[in-house]
Image 1 (tube, one colour):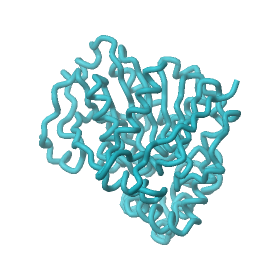
Image 2 (image 1 turned 180 degrees about the vertical axis):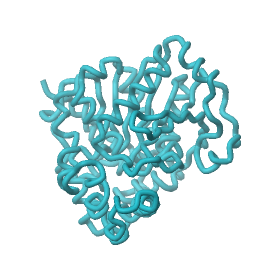
Image 3 (image 1 turned 45 degrees about the vertical axis):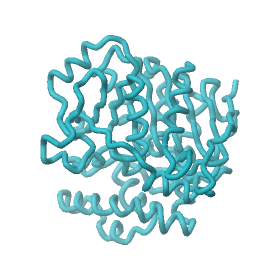
Length: 357
């Protein structure tokens, strides 16, 4: 059996008439509340760390101001202590959500804030897991994160589950995090039977198509690629100072597209021959027919990151998948309502899918 295809619209406002305005307004200007978190730093098997930001009715309200000066630039305002871990570990069954952010995202990202706020108000525990180097702290190793790192997704999901073992767990991946989540769900379907459901939002399912589109389209190259490189490039150049001779700093400095950056750093650092090899091996598209848990795959058909022609039809997904492909919405935006709009449509869509399962 094939996947279900939903073409119902996202009611984007008339004052955001096309893909670019929808995407940019949702990412940069849409109003959100400031959600605060307790941060937990978890050591990884290879000697690095991942920061998890928790917001839960099982925990006390996080302080409004950072109690540790190192957290000032983050959405976390305190560290999760032993009593907090004990409260999570001893809790009764309750709904829980782990959120995997997109490229250079964090718990400060507008989509993370709006999803956390919505589900927390509904009584859910929400934890935002930061990929290495995205939590406001440089990670320890020369490596970073990438869109096909199934081992990292496994570690993140298993860590969250272990902290709240009685939780009715769900997973949401945004953009890069959505692709990585889908790839892992398809590669290891028996390992994730404890997950109730999952959702991937604006995931670049075909990384070759997405990578080429972001690198070759002039608007995408000058706006989106430049935006990502503004943080990616300095992070890697700082790594090069700590790991001399490991990173080709000249190629990093000369990178003008995501293809350039992935050729210079992401691919060689993480075991791929080049950007094309990285994109090909890491794409989640070919794994969608192997997914065994209920999964929402939401992509607007006007997403500027992924051409509409690259979106999958029902035959490319398992019977557990629902492809929702509204005509409008942009990339991880889905702004609705009158001026100045809001980001409430996306978390409501995710919850509707989760609670129907």
